[in-house]
Every structure is written in C-alpha cells, then in structure tokens.
Amino acid sequence: MLDPIVSKISSKEKIDVLIPAIAKDLKTLPYVIDAVRKQVKHPIGSILIVAPRQNKIRELCRRKGCRFIDENTVLPITKKDIHYRSKKWERSGWLFQQLLKMSGDTLCTSKYFLVIDADTVLIRPHVFRKGNKTLFYCRKWSQPEYFKTYRKLLGKKAAAPMSFVTHYMLFERSKLQQLKREIASKHHTRWYSAIIRKMDKSKQFAFSEFETYGNFLYSKNPSGLVLKSALNKSIGMNIAQITQKQIKTQSRRYRSFSFHMRKGYVRKAKMR
Image 1: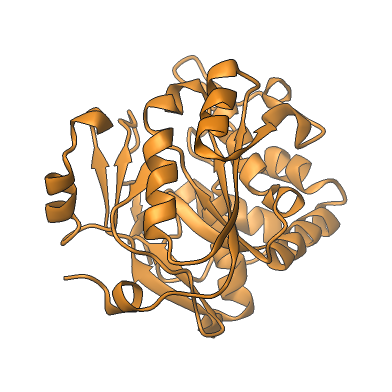
Image 2 (image 1 turned 180 degrees about the vertical axis):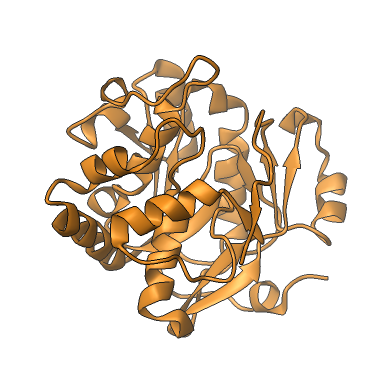
C-alpha cells in the first residue's frame, strides 16, 4: 500500500539534486535520473552529476539535461590525497564521494538539495518536506564505527532511534554548513581533514555522511524530523532486466531499489 504522505501530497519546495558517480555507474545512472524526475514530488532545479572528467559521463549529462561537475574541482583535495585501504579492500574513492556529498552546499543553489547514490532507483513517489519538517527514510541497523566517528567529531553520542544510511537524503544547505563549521571549530582544522583524521581507517566502514548529518539534526531538533522506514531492496541483477510490471509489483512493498553487490557489507549492529 502506498504511503499516503507521498502518494497524494506534493511539495512546492524547489530542490536541487546531487548525484556523485563514476564510470561503473553508467549502467544505472540514466535510470536513477529518470526515476528522480518521475518520483520526486518537488519542483527540481538543477540535477548535478559530480564525477571524473570522462567523455561518456559528460555525454550522459548532455543527453539527460544534467549539469556536469568535475569531482576534482570541488575540494582542495582529490581521491589521490586520501589513503583509506588495506590489503583486502580499497575505500578511498568511497570516502571521497562522501566528502563530495557534504560539499553540496557549495555546488547547489536551492535551500535544499537531494543527494542520491548513482545505483539507487526510486520506485515510489517521494516528498522530503512536510510543513516545516524534513522526511528521512531510515533503517534499523548500521555500522558501529559510524557512531564512534560521530562521537569523535562532535563530542556527543548519536541519539536517533534509526539509521539514516539509506542511499538518499535531503540536505538543508544552511544546516550542512553549520555541521561543517562545528566540526572545523572543534578540531581546529578544515572539516574534511577532521573527518579523515578522526575515523579509524583500519575499519572498512568508518564514516557515514548520512549518519553524521542526520544525527546532527536530530541532536538539535528531533521534532523537526519525520523518520520513515526506507523499504529499500538490494538487487543483484542488471537493471535493464527489470520490467515495468515487476517495478509496479515491487513498489507495493518497497520505495527504492539499489543495484549493487556489496561484498562484506553485513549487518553489524542493530540500532539501540
């Protein structure tokens, strides 16, 4: 059954959309963009694709009417400056993308902007603002290290009853700026440097931009957030194999599909 909040109500709040991507996302990215335009019930300003300067990605942006942003022009650092790896895994690019998402306040012009992963396709209508509140689509489990890093960065325990790590989130530019200022002030360095220094880089999943921003807002004004179940389904098959009939059927149970196989990404901890 469709959520009555999103099936009948749209929002007049204009938002931008930011999607970090790399070459391997080209199989899903066109579907992600199309689904955003169909399922996000807000007026959409710009859709920004933050990615490496590669011809295929730039051509997709031209074809889809999106704004291309070279990922290496966003921050004073690039992926090459991040050393987050072990003998078994390489997460430097993964962390760099999170820092790019947290730079959306400098890239977008609308008061609010939606960040969505380049492998996640919305299959139900979504709104992200209801009255004066922001809707967050959440889950019941997370990675313990996310909360340890949050505490190191902000000096307080994460208190939200659900996890914000669900592949897409609406950011308020001014609130994101406030978060980054607090991190920078507390650690006497730039916000991204503090994140890199404070996370335990021996752990494969040590920082989450969504968990950090969501818990920061919750700590300031929990009544200003509406927490809803994400109902995301991970799909291990080619997106082109999914039919519209299958999507319609699955939308009765789920809000979104994520087309990835995350090896080793297991349910490490339930929410308190």
